[in-house]
Image 1 (cartoon, rainbow, N blue to C red):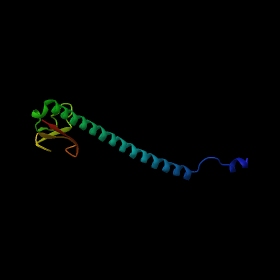
Image 2 (image 1 turned 180 degrees about the vertical axis):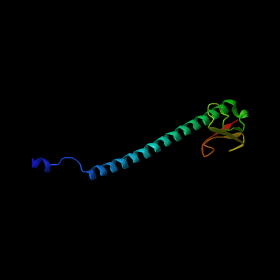
Image 3 (image 1 turned 90 degrees about the vertical axis):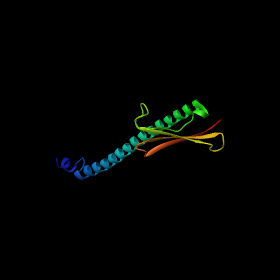
Image 4 (image 1 turned 60 degrees about the vertical axis):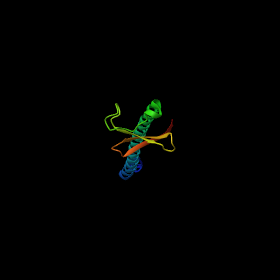
Length: 124
């Protein structure tokens, strides 16, 4: 009988507490990592959408040709299905040389905190 009492098997309270602290620290680190991944995915999605909006505008300008290229501003809530974005088109005639237009399309989001810029040159 005495042998059974001396042979305690199991964990002490201190061992259980230390294991819980280690587990908690690991889980909190994982939670911070997951939050960072979610934010990065959100930013990546916004960059992709802004790039597509800028490319669409560039294609529209190329379709209208040299004579149809003009400055344009589409403010927030004016681009259908993309209310979070603002698109500004800047046309500089004679840049970089005579008979050429430098086209710059900038798409902003998050109250102009972030942007994507695409540039091209059209010739007559």
